[in-house]
Image (cartoon, rainbow, N blue to C red; front, side):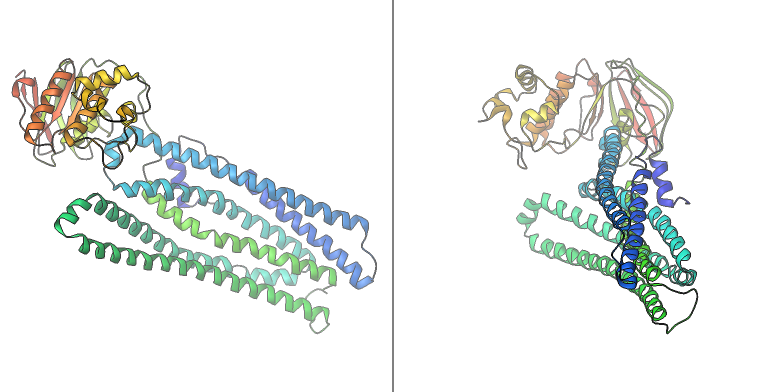
Length: 534
């Protein structure tokens, strides 16, 4: 079977990992159908003996029926177990690939989309790919194999009925594809609208104090209501198309079975003589097998919306599941940085030569939007560039991220440190007494409203970086949102804590020139080392 564009995309994205095969699940599904077809034959034979010949059912035939039904029941359980294991394994692999991309690209990737977008990726888009591959892709093969086997049996029993089915069967997948194309378009629009509404809500929620203070919350409430109504309308369109798809498939399937039933009924009554003679046994077996044949196509149609969801999800996941190139040979100790013809593509930045020696302090200047933050992210290895720093580096941004957990959890971030070491680092940044005076100390919950001011949160972020003991500090305007006195205090604190570190500092605010050994200026997509050994 020719690979679909969606499968080709998935194979290209996951070329570095092996997803579980679908063959066991397909084999079990086909085996269930074969046992059911055989059971229909045994049942038709028993009914023929009871009704036509008036004799009791043969014990071997009855045993055969029992064996087929028992085998079908066992395979049903095995199929459910395989589907659950297949779904779980695929979900784990995709989540791991996505997590590795987040670990590799981190801040440079996360800030390219709203927070709600990443929630949708994790909660909807990745499961959509898993559901499509687990259900639709498996059923895609079953819907071809089982009808072929069933048609072979029906042609063997009565070639005229088989010819009738061949004429009516193509209508089912034809309408499934036509309706499915429209559903895919609507799914993409719904995902876009859902992302925008979620981002709008989270943005207004964070700005709630400002809205309440300026009296703008009523207008924004109406804005959210209108956006929610628009999303509801789009969602109902998706639901209506899904119901239309199911209704169309049911109609044509019922029509095909009705035609076969009418033909068999009139043939048994002797009112219609077309094609081979229909016996009670052959007619009943064909009549029982035909819905099974059509049900596989109907089931594929029911799963077709999963393909539409997966196609919409593939656009959001493009480039987020690919292989992560992590240089495990990168040394822990920073021994300097020298880059000739430094190049970065997104955004475009170039430099003829960049040099840093251990212990240097470099100030990065340039107008807003010139690419200063992108340069730091590239040097840290979060963006693709021709060169990156070799050594352990940490990044301090304008608004450091904090978890809703405790102060201890925000300091440790999964590592284990003794309390004495934590308090030592807090004392270095001037937070030791402030944290000790809190009722719960290090176990104080940060929550949505931390018990620390903006300057104290920035000090906490510095203490967190001091625990990592990195040789290179990348500072991306860490005092941008602080008042001038706090800016001065934080800058002095960084200078005190990082005297023996290598520092690359981006700041629009004034800094002491004698702290820096070089200045890099970004202008017109070029990085120039304008001063050295200041």
